[in-house]
Length: 425
Image (cartoon, rainbow, N blue to C red; front, side):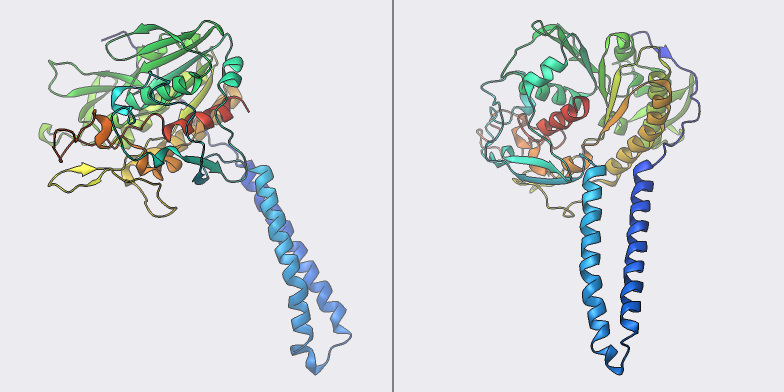
């Protein structure tokens, strides 16, 4: 196992001030006051002409005068929200007739199990949707603008195979204007890609827990160490200008958990007689240690935390089979997702809020790329049976489905569109 960096227990992380929420509450208070003043004015103006017919005439006139004011205040509030709040994670999927900017024929960086087009997926409707945030715009990914902004810089993507999925989408989105040199690749599929014309480097780093772990043939159960960061990403941290990171579905795997060189429990191993530790608890500890390192380091890159990637497994036709063969997005409210996935996403948001406040005090920019909900609405974006090349050609019907990774091209390209919006406002 590679050397690891040890970090002492973190200081208490403070919640940031909710400035926008307070501003919105103040705005609504002003609206209520104005509405009350208007009602009083109309009442007084009608008092001098008070008659028994007031019930039939004056009340109707009062309501008729107040309703337009209420409507106008509502419009003003919506305008205020649009001006003050641009939440890229809130919106809807809308048709996009032009489709993707690349295909499997123009880009060869995607992994075979995410190359849904080459693998023969017959339905291609999943390619013709665009995420439209509410209250702001999200333009298509502009590879030239991105490369010019990244000139003489480096960008690290740290995570598991979903991050490899994410990184390959980024390479493909850039591919219409520039091709990188792959200058490093190892058995964990950690890779380094270099664009010489721009002196720009992309690091795709395999680190599924962010903290250190052991997964060896001689170990009957994987081991995860909550007091040591994974040196796979920390050893080159000083080289990163930007770092995008996230946890992974590896936190759901069976693992013995260590802290301060002692076994403190185990996740998903009742046969060992150890204290059971939920995956969200382990993930929170890993994020706390990671953010402690980031917010106290002398090197201060731009750090982005990407939220959890949801799965869309459904029961298949055959006993025990799980599939994902939908061909269009879910409608809002049609699918709530796996509660465990949602819990992991909540951990991320809570730990981000704490770390962002400390980062602001220490001069470290930390942002959240919240792709959870928009991805939750795209069950059609996974490889499904087409993780393998033409899976049904042999006549077999019960084939393995991949409802975790994402087709490239596909909805995952939207993650990079929003990423660009964050790093290049």
